[in-house]
Image 1 (cartoon, rainbow, N blue to C red):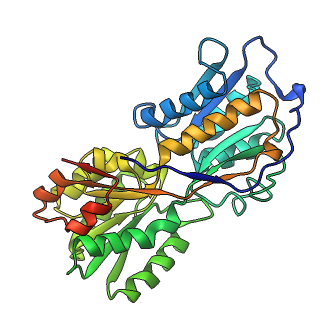
Image 2: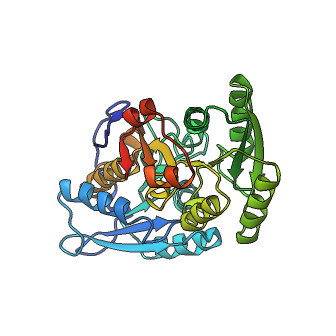
Length: 328
């Protein structure tokens, strides 16, 4: 059973969002901007719809949604965002950190609800968590900052692990960046007596090169960084890890569901559900500036026993008992 919980930092005064910022149409229009694909984000999109429904909005009945999927091709974001702004959407839902930053740079008037794994204050999306100010608010899920915990879980899964590879995107532009994550992981690795090897990939070809270097360095396990670039290529990453028999932990359960060994991170579905609720509240007249940024406080551990068996691993009983989901 999945455990979900969110905390709202502080409530704010409710005021009407200027009607000039809304789409001039009988049915409000939401712009849905994502760096992923419709297929990989299907479960989250359903959770977003559920949040909207709980505030009284159902797609096709009293609200319309324009979807823009970059499918991991981030150079599409500016054009897609400009198109949504040109359509005068009532709200933009930015479904990842890159989309949120692009939307924020494109408009200061259209309300934005974001889902991000990057600190929204450091990223310039909001002034503060309690009082966002401006035209954006949303849900912040701890993502990159959970990397040391994933390292610990790998060590628990493979007690004798000596070398762990960390795969990051070489062109990461978020403020939580690959360099900061790598430094934090290196300190955590030293603390538990494990050697950390950082591999980088920002293109399709670099993914193959990164795995070649990981194998060459004799890594006992792999930690894949939290990044939408990797999420859009989850099947390929899982297949490469299986081909080279490298036990791997990921940030999202979709990887474990696709055959990866394990994942650990915030409950993304619940985050999208909360984002849907915020989007509905803004459609009803509340201002993003007055809606505090929400933070995830519970996380989910998913273990794929079939993948473990294929790798010749016996999952420790204590780890299984802590898992929120076990895939047989």
